[in-house]
Amino acid sequence: MQQSTPLKEHQLARLFLTVATLVTLVAMFVFAITKGTRNEVSIAPDSEGIVGDSLEIQSIHDIGEWEFLTLSDEELVDTTASRLLGSDRQLTRIYYGTLRLGVDMGKLSPGALRLTGDTLHVTLPPVGLLDDDFIDETRTKSFHEKGSWDEASRSALYQRAKRQMRSRCLTARNMEIARQNAIDEVSQLFHTLGYNYVKVEFQP
Image (cartoon, rainbow, N blue to C red; front, side):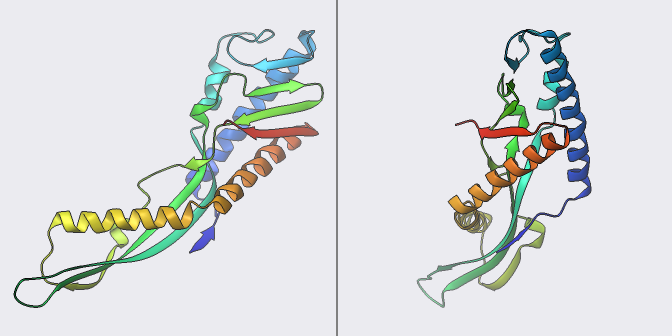
């Protein structure tokens, strides 16, 4: 199994949108701090000190999926069927998959961004598998095939490959790596925007 985190064109575009959105939110924070009298400002559609409607809040939801770890895997899966007369049938296939771990910003809860004193608190949605269709069927290869196999048998083999990939890749260690990457990237982004103290947590 190989791990890689290269940014593709669509990921660069998503990151640019993320930065632009968060710059808008920072401007909202500054306005709330200068206009409000409370020590804590909750960034939610009905929060005090926020002018206008909820379009700014909706914009961060519209970021969609934010990827923090990419896992590439290949699995060799086989099956055998016995015949009453004649030799056994055998089918062995190699499946390739790319599992992307990250957060769905569309699930960001109200009040997920707030400022307490000089500390910015960010509560992200849970880290999880962003797309369950992670097997690249165009790259699937029949390593060994003996006899005839129907579509149901091939589908069963495909599902076994998915289960093996999930078991191999969605480990506690990999999930923790993705969470730490999320903490590092989000914290660094807000540090760049002028916040010295950023605390990133995850929804349960």
